[in-house]
Length: 82
Image 1 (spheres, rainbow, N blue to C red):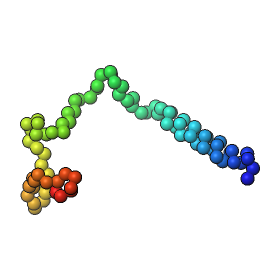
Image 2: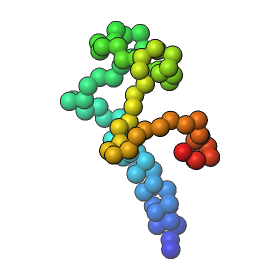
Image 3: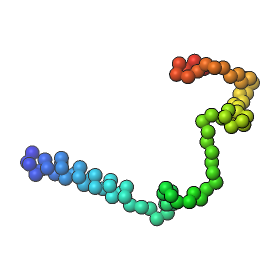
Image 4: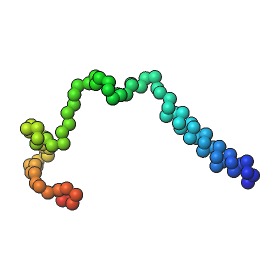
């Protein structure tokens, strides 16, 4: 294999591929909505998430199983014994 073929295969082709990927990711689509930037007004309704639903005083969500009663236990966690 000649040195020019080696340079073409191992240098030029990867650089062209990376430049193509860079160009595709940097092109902004016209139909795409603009993203939120910090400091801008938030145009949507507030959506609250809380990791501790007991702290809200609201009833806990329940999962209804067909033909079975749901029971809660203190087991589970990393052991996986549900």
